[in-house]
Image 1 (cartoon, rainbow, N blue to C red):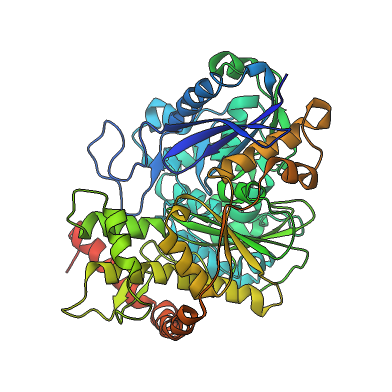
Image 2 (cartoon, helix red, strand yellow):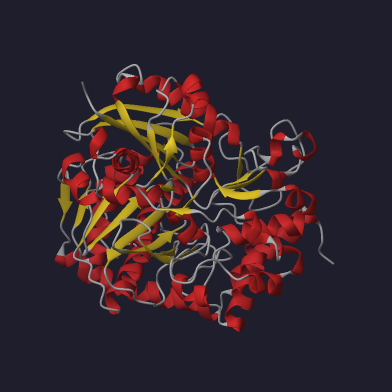
Length: 547
């Protein structure tokens, strides 16, 4: 009889279900189910009224329906009775307002047409005014939580999104019993038990083991109408790999799983990729490279500096401080360019990558800023926008495309440099995600940073990590494990390939990087209001509010 762990990986567009053999680490079955409604940015389903700018919503029922469908596919290959544990990872901060029984507000008729009653996806950026105010007040009050986030709070996080609901939809806010992370809501759907996972609470919810949650008097200082906000947050913190409960009778009936299977606390999708890439020690940075990028590093040292989006004790792996940094757009940038600027009806990515790969570093005289979706690290400013510098009448699409790849690599280098300057070593980089299939991208990153890049063995490292959490929640008594140190060597395999930096390319990229740094400082710090003014001009034009 086999012993399998099931990982449920909820991404931006779809859910992946992965069954992993706990004895060999073999990935025995994979199923991917796309969300029916996808990412909702234009208008709510069935309604014609356009959503405000920077909205990114989802339908919570999509998560349930897609998980049932994905699990059904898994059970064609793996007997339900041989699944010993389940782990869940989710994009973050993706959150939704619910009632005490878990009912999303948008499922109540009176709130169905109110966008603030729906799931706010991680890349919902409309709460930037709230984030700006939080940063201002927290800085003035010297709030202790600020230093755990490099001094800047993102509009993507829990508190700004909750406050946005209170500001823009008071009736939704008042009717909400729990403001919940989507990962925790999914675990509740599976187990019937509410908890708050330490990963999302720490990195996106302003909680940490040292200081707890933001104080009520801070919430009152922000806005008296949200002084009760902390009463709408789950506070029973559960760490990655810890058992929340078991598969309920209701979920078992609808999914085909066996009732009573142990279920781990949820975790953030990218962070789940750390164990999935085989890392459980210091010195390695893990990067999930997809539509966006998330950089994660384990360290025994607690350092406060500018360059990370969050540091949480035990937030990724127990007994380590887990540092997180990120870039809000990477693959999205490449997809945007290929879709809008390449005229070929064939495989535009392959075509433009082939043309760009024969170019020499610095040969086009172009440098770009990779802020098409704002900057998550180290500037933490969603008002920032992209820029391409050095265009001439002779510039070709492949030169611009390569400059965009280099820009995202420069963005990663700034993050890595910030860690190393405070004595946190980076000896190697382990990568996974959709972009690792493109040699040009990974080689460019190695050349720019001067650090070897290793491609993780699993194409599904995030889902594999979630399965590992499930195996640990199950425990050795059920065929699982009692620690990551024991689970990771068994359930992961050596890297597929290593990209070594080229010394000649690095020399040129050092010069380009200096130019990038000057642009980064000028438009990101000294004159960041330029891009904000452009965005406001666009908004005024759309709304017809020009004088």
